[in-house]
Length: 505
Image (cartoon, rainbow, N blue to C red; front, side):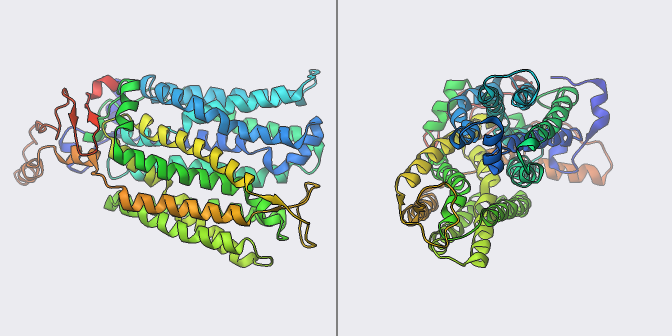
């Protein structure tokens, strides 16, 4: 693929070995990352914009609380079947078209759900609200898989984990803002139209940015050897390779279980704490600490693994510490008057557990290379959503109604639930997933190995060329550890085939 004439002016060659191998990075990669991050942020705010003000929204449109809850649950339901379709769209239509489609779906959904507030005589406001949320849910399946692919195709190896972290953590940051912004905007039912209109603005601006500023799915020149060998396997072939990859299956099941636990934790936190007398405001504060420290931890961890490439060690240590914190939460959450302890525990829960999400996504790509990044990260997310549904159903099923204690702050009009068994089960599942991954997950970093397999003599030749001030001769890369045209089977039992950069273009 050849870029426009002006592309070379916007490119900045890396001062590393990659530049000498014909690899280049482009400044516009940051524009792509900005658009993708803002899109993920906007989509997350639309997801949970109703949850913090559910009672007021139900009052405004004469709906039940269960109907309002479905406006958030639809994201989870839609992501499971359509997540697989999104993997295909991302790998075959290309990153640019997938992002633009996502931006338009996100914007259209934000507009559709605001129609019941306009003077057009809508007789069934729930249909418009659910239709808008469903479009936004479809958009989520496209944007949630994209950061790892964007990092692989546009960023050099020493920036990939950081780029993935920025794109991935923009989603929980949107959740945090929605939990703060919606209650601030909605004081009574007359304020609901204002809230819906406010959320349209960023969705529209990001749609305009995506359409106007994104011109290509891949840069004219790959930023690394891994990007040059990145592949879009045939859809079913790629899924077969992943299913046959032992290391990938272990990572997907264990970290997918972690995604399900974190989703259940955020969804059930208020119900768990109100039984012991904690206010809704305190529960929201704990959720904010969980997300905020998770984003902070992801920033630090992303920079660390970019420099050290200790992906496996970082993930295993983070999940082990998360297991200890989950046990502490299961015990302390059943005691009244422990506000400070709970605030610290929720902060550590996010710091250790939530922050490893970008690392896990990078590791999914490393252990499954050269399968496409969209398939590698997307399948982990889809499996995590499915496990989240199962875990949430299991946790709620194990609860029992009890006589309401005098200090309870639950407001559902029924007797509060006893969450002791459910919280102990959540801690047990977290510990089991962590231990299984620590004991049985072992994998080489295939993408890094492919990049390192390029001619080891280039660096010496470059030094000699620099000393005598002669131009650096073009180098021919050595073959990859596997034959790109012939499938080969490694210790994990997965068959791999590397394709050329031109196919992605």
